[in-house]
Length: 115
Image (cartoon, rainbow, N blue to C red):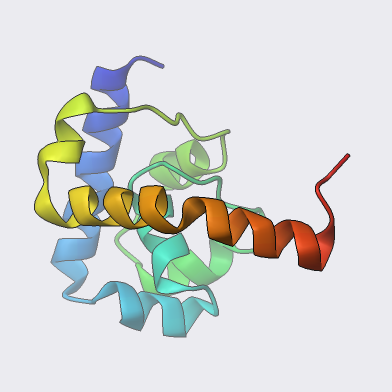
């Protein structure tokens, strides 16, 4: 799938969300997922699990079967270099760059370094 197809699918998923009138928090509450995971699903940045599909369908009844099946495929992660220009994303990136080394040290201390 190319980035144009991903954009088209993501746009269609966002349109279903908009039509529902629900927020990410409302959909998350109805599905038992987190709001960030719901946003990732609707941006095609995460894979919908088979057991979660009926819950999402119940929360978004207008979600077409074809899009539901598309969401169950492995996500297409990509990087848009223009995204870093968005102020919120820029600040999040800045926070990770500033605190990343310390966070990594704490993770290693708590859980090991993965080696």
